[in-house]
Length: 127
Image (cartoon, rainbow, N blue to C red; front, side, top):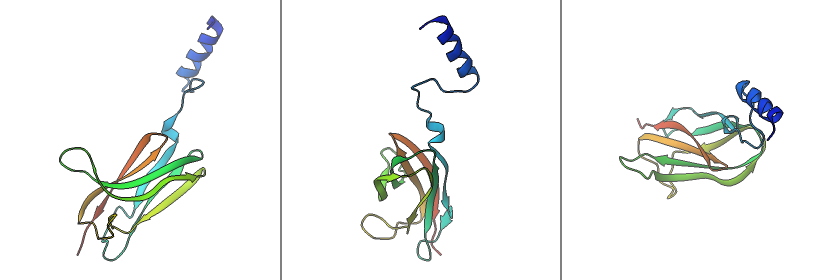
């Protein structure tokens, strides 16, 4: 690496540019949220929504955090789905992989893209 290349890389780093070959994961998944963020699964459902900055293979699961790792898998919403750049949503009925209603409580939606995890929380309640 010569001095000119080094100066260009340092200037780009200071300006917030990425180094060539560096993957910027901060823009890969944006606006991750559940809508609604709390729901009665006996009466409705929720959607996990997000935007992808570029086309990618996506997996999305719902887990329940325990008192100790690992997380308890509740259900898989999608696995290794190729999605385009833009906004996406996957519906969760509040059920488990066994087809039963998940108990009231807090859950985590995990969207995985290129070995990076992005998380959002959702609450189930029952009246």
